[in-house]
Image 1 (cartoon, rainbow, N blue to C red):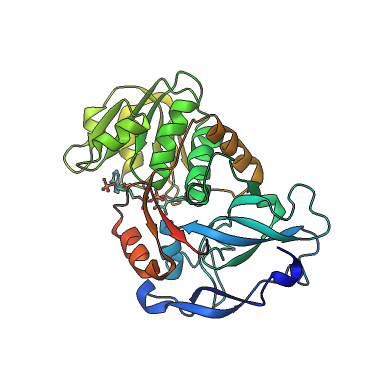
Image 2 (cartoon, rainbow, N blue to C red):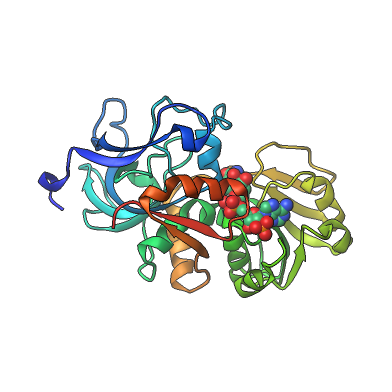
Length: 328
Ligand SMILES: NC(=O)c1ccc[n+]([C@@H]2O[C@H](COP(=O)([O-])OP(=O)(O)OC[C@H]3O[C@@H](n4cnc5c(N)ncnc54)[C@H](OP(=O)(O)O)[C@@H]3O)[C@@H](O)[C@H]2O)c1
């Protein structure tokens, strides 16, 4: 696409006020396509991406509702959306890695967002070339949930070959990547929790043991089983207190719930926040090419389905990821 073909206006979702998504999300056809250079950001290189698909994450509705305002403040109005899969259509002069025409993926991050629109401007440092074996739907399903799984298991829990891992919420966005990555990165045993009816799904993803969290208390079933790692992919209430019953004495608990509590003896308790970056996306791309993981996609929504998609996401019972078509 030449520069002349980039339109000045685009379609996208706009949040004009904080509140219930169906009330405050507006579909617009006349949003300004981001310009690549604005004063104040000359120190970074940027790419303009034509977005083909995105996917929804719980943090999208938390931000739209204003629940995550302290941590991720946004001036109104703003375009939500974090996961990006698309094609680079323009770059700043100093870009070294990416070029026009590259098929890319990115986690735009909860502070920046902007993925639910036809064009998004992102720093080159957080954009990666998507795996060749993935289509745009698969690429859109991966960035935030996949990076969370990778960083949770590798950077925070320091997963090593032979480790015994318990994943809370193996059927969700983060959990479905975590089962596959834990096995691919060498875990000898992966136990997971999921709801009634999702056993087949987590088994196919690679879990060795599954516990129905709606019927059984995982901390009683697994008490004294000496897990090296408990990765709480759902932010379950009391997970840390219960995890101490199943972890070995120097085990690690990592949670996606950002409210931090105390370590206990030699056991580590880590609240993680996912950091968008191209290096980790490249690592995910390598793992994808080696068939270590394939995103679990439960639904592909059309652009106008945005309200249904937010409703489903807020139900808290999505299996894997819901993908969102922005522009084919
Ligand atoms: N800190 C960070 O940087 C970070 C990054 C990414 C995500 N997160 C947070 O992590 C959480 C999960 O994200 P996600 O994208 O994976 O969400 P998600 O896909 O919407 O999670 C839905 C899944 O969670 C399962 N689930 C719900 N309650 C459960 C429980 N008590 N035990 C086991 N499974 C349970 C559901 O299973 P059933 O359908 O079987 O009930 C469903 O499969 C969200 O709160 C999100 O905001 C934080």
